[in-house]
Image (cartoon, rainbow, N blue to C red; front, side, top):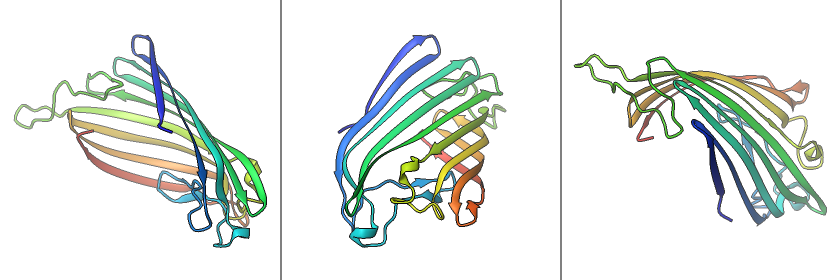
Length: 217
């Protein structure tokens, strides 16, 4: 079913919302319809067992739903965003079945250094970039902490603890440069720590630096 989202503005600068979805999925060995979870560097750190056989492949089997409460707050140049995600999926592998619930949350904050105001609709620079007028747009420092916990019931019947992490924690910092209302440049650094995911214990941490030029955001 379609994603549902509602928002309630309780105070000036504060937005509260909740999102959710519900559906039913029936996967097959060739198309399991199961989720994979990736790091900020787009490396898969968790996926279900899949060896191409019915006895060794986990497939979606029944209802799945997600609940996502969230908040956003701005005060002048300052912004704060928080989100919690609860994701439940019915699964099966051969004759074994399970109902697994994974949890994730994140909190991020930012502050504009150029006298601009933060906004839920996006930053609109008071002085768009212009060399002729000696204007440089808006600059924002940002930070974020986020983590994802895999349901422990996934191990060992539905996922391998020696190759799949059951917890990922990440923190990141970055700079957003808003040249005008439709163009921005981002540079971010993320450091992710894992629990499990390796034969000897924990998967090695990931350090990643990313840049992006975004048009018409």
